[in-house]
Image (tube, rainbow over all chains, first blue to last red; front, side):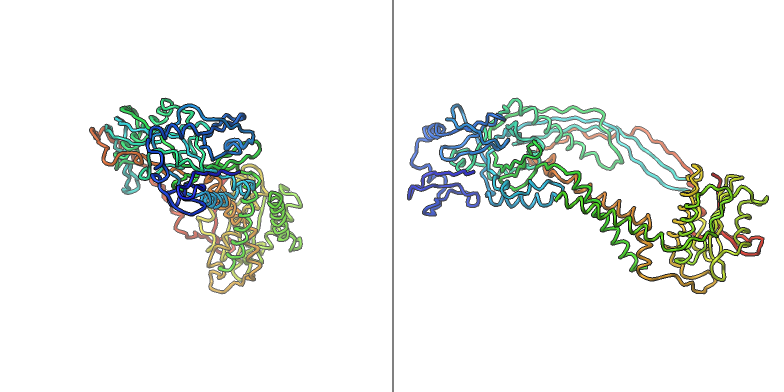
Length: 344
Length: 275
């Protein structure tokens, strides 16, 4: 498994790689550091440049699961990230691959391995295959396609709230319940709500590694791909918008509910929320992926390549859980017995 | 790893079994304290109960008596229980400390009579609690478990009671206070096992359900700062309802023991109910 990038160093002509820590490119031979403008300087006509680079893209397709990964000419994939198949087909990329924006990697591969290792160690019920070092070494950085939506939302909720007060007097306990009709209507504006454009990545797990820090978002440029793979979206903007609407409706509803304060309970009986004026951009977000197969089922772990936040689902071994529970019970039982007897 | 856990499980189980059984074979069989006129209990059961009673006697200086009968010689359950205890010479020490549980099949009543320092330890509230626990078994006709529950609770309350080392008349009662002895009584108590079980279960479940990751996005994450506007903000009072409910008076919760004088002239405490 090797993903090697060999952008040419303007000084010596050796390989140049993007360094997440420097947020710049570095020549692995003469150790010079370059920013984006220095690398692309020789090609001044930018229009021509992007077309030229697009021609140099390869696409790696997996016949067993249908995944498609894009890499520039000198970066290669040797196995499928999603199903671990080694039977992947390399082809020239044809068509349009032009994201608007991108958040570069900030976490290095080594840091990502550390994050995963620490995290999985705490999963005491996970089968040991998930802690295998060779598997952890397969961790791979991928730019995941995202649709970033801007929109306005207008919402209305109506419901009943109660305020309960109890007191005692003599031999009786009194309970007083006041009922209120609550109406809230409001609007808000949301920007860059992310929806991932990949069917292969579980939406819940992707939701858990959010948010990205947009302050470091850059205009897309091919140079950022060096050393990483990229995925082309297979969920189009129209489909992604449905997911975004659901999220935003929930956000605004919660926001309105938060304004109902000072009650013992509140039940929404009616609501209508409208999301409108939507617009979206196509962006790439950095993610590290590690995939493990256990009992013929793929388990994908996802690390945010910018913030390091991790999510993933490990299978739970029932035997491990019962044994752990019984072991713990024995320890507590002995502790109470031997410890408790000390203080009597 | 898996095998290790399995082995561990087996070790744990055998450990528990050995510990529990070892505490039962320490005393010789001799039944003076389980009087079963109706043969509701098998010989083995009587033997086991007697062993447990002997242990309590040694540990806490309290004599336990279990009487099952359908003939109370025309006396009330309370009087019969008190008299049976007094006239058969039960009790430990000068104040004749101990408890008697009478299962009166004639009236389908159970009565627990306390004497000596047991009167102080077993307050009315505790007797009530014990009867609560025992009654369901009696209703089901499970006399052995009822008797065992009686002994278990006696043991538990005696252990928890800080004044159990002293009799009501002020003279010190000597308990078997060796460390290992206390350890054993702690370990064999169902309460300890229950606490250990509950804690282990909670910890296991917490770890189990923390397996995925957590959501850190909330309803404000993608909201533009200051963009939220509230146009309508109405809270309209509709109606109110007030209900009242009688507070159950808990006269027993004070922790005292009510006493009466039996025909022999000795004080007894206790309580009972029908099943």
